[in-house]
Image 1 (cartoon, rainbow, N blue to C red):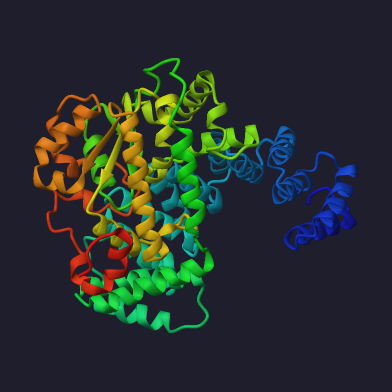
Image 2 (cartoon, rainbow, N blue to C red):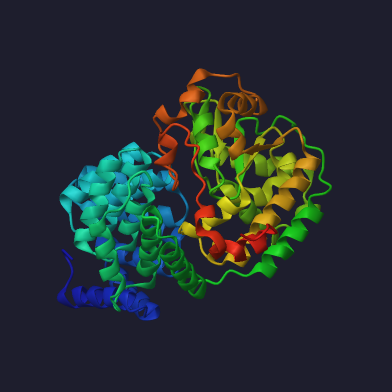
Length: 519
């Protein structure tokens, strides 16, 4: 507030309170009045940018902050907020550059370090994320999200003891922290203890905890009870978690079924691609979550030519932005798209994922729900390989029911929806594979367990890769694994992964939904 009269200081304080209280017109008036008299004042410009961010004007916020930085280039807070504004615009690299400048100017500020760590983790650079988040924790050990995110980054790197320590410190700060319990539970190679069982039971008795925390704790309790062999209690805990999630964010089957029918019909005929080799760099791994996709990716990522990029959002973003440009929802605009349109979209995807080809020539995109777009890939990225992974349907569906998913609403909250979704996924993929058999290849989890080397060789051949012995030692590969299977894929193949049979008749509703015989 240096250089401002007392009245203007009060106006900026009042403007900040108005932003907090969402009185946006009042905030605009107060801050604008100060800027009329002091157009270069950094705090007035910074508050204006924050207001612009709150009112969905991120590009204007970037402009306001850049203007302030022209006159106050060494103001760390301005650079930190510029990072936030770039991030709101979807400009990840620019956001990282701004946050890095902020910590260079003022290395004792924890929040820019946290934002850096979160951004690095989002782009798959878990080593850089760990370094930034450790700085955050050393500067501000009370910031709970930093403990959780650091635990996640360490777990993705396979440093499970260190990850567990971070999650436990998160529970010290907040004993009902669902994300901390989720993190501990997802280290599936280490069972929770009797003390954890007592702590979970005590926290779940509270009436003052958030629904999201209650959901995560019930998932953790279900995993704990399953590990103890108490399957009715485990089923009850998983069911409670999913029932609450379904009430909060209900998923509806009819829109999904309508989408599926449209997508199958509208992808039956597509234009011949301009460049049949476009996208040869990409190996999509698609299908149901919990079907072994992380294991198949880990095998491929052990190959010296392949970077394992894990679950990328870029394909969906490219298609969503094209829908917005056309003003027509996907898949309804598919018949209007020309070969040149598909080539443009394919190049857009490749430009967005170029980061993953800096060290190796090929990369995997393992977002399971990309199966919904598999029908257009023969026009958009005709050179890409699509690997569909399948596992026993009951095991797959039950594993989904037990897993907490953060993208909501989600199909895995009821057994009936789960069965319908899995059958719809398989029906669509069968149809698309029949149309593009050379590029869409089916690989089964149980076949890999039964005959590892022949199936690994077949997987590599389908991707146009020579066999490399390192792919048989996939569990030793040093990479970030950003899924719930991070612990399992760092072990040799396990043949005893089936869990559903122990629940007996409790899973009969799921068997019915899948069209399977009851127990």
